Image 1 (cartoon, one colour):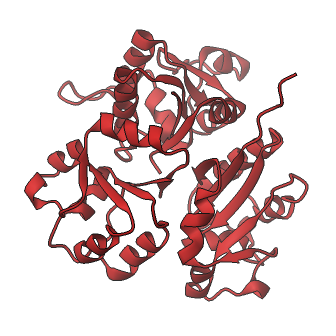
Image 2: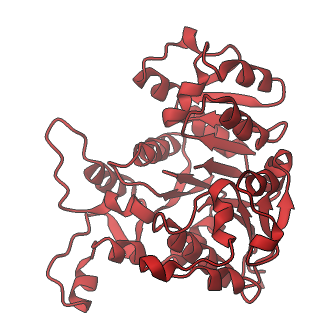
Image 3: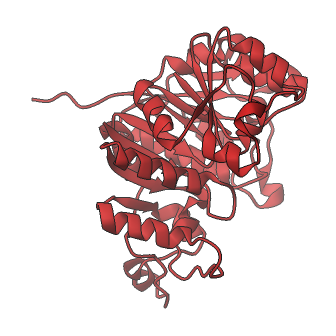
Length: 100
Length: 130
Length: 123
């Protein structure tokens, strides 16, 4: 299934809470302010990087660009998608949940 | 595929309506059918006819209206959410003895049943603006 | 003759009651879905667990009481009312504090629970 997250979390408790609620084999799509979590070097980056062994993580490229996060600042292993790629993700996942 | 979209936030609340709009455009470019876009909670703010942003700012209301016109997309505003927030179409206004008809072109007002129906009819259901 | 469509809907509720109007509208969407004879379940996370706290007196702030809606869930054939274990613990709530029995789900199982539904709505 696809989890869409539109807010960033950086403190350990919030990041753990988010990632614990995503099942193994699921896909996490970061959009809007959620893309800030895809930036390397943050307090969340290590935890997110470790999660890549269980989940697929994607981030919306236009939202990253809008926020000044260049592709080389994104955590290695996070896929950058445009809106058409986001549509493809939705097509590939029968169950989709947008987190508050 | 047939897609149904629920939009929960207004243009000035969060990026949700922008994300929904761009997602719908991308889905159409990819040849998918957008069965319905249903505006709920403060998402109804996307349908106020008389919203007048400054010239150098995008108008979400106009963009949705144009999208509906160009691609014949069913844009539905929830009647109870709209009434709570003072958005009435002509028929509703007449029914309640009000003067203004504030619903932008391309939108129609209907009940939550249309949201459930869209979620059942479509192959994929997404919510924006949570 | 075509069988009517029946899908499994999950309403994920993360917000506390009374601090906004969203609870009422979330419950309206939930009840409409149930009235369409769909299989509806609820998952309470984070401050959403306060939705089912006993003893709410919303009339003190001129707000609607939501407790009767939760207590009527059985009438609407709402299937599962679930609450995340950690969300309850973090907020100092145990089963005796709640106005109806809930099925507790450990945080680590939340993803799997959500994934076994057809349509997921954030309320």
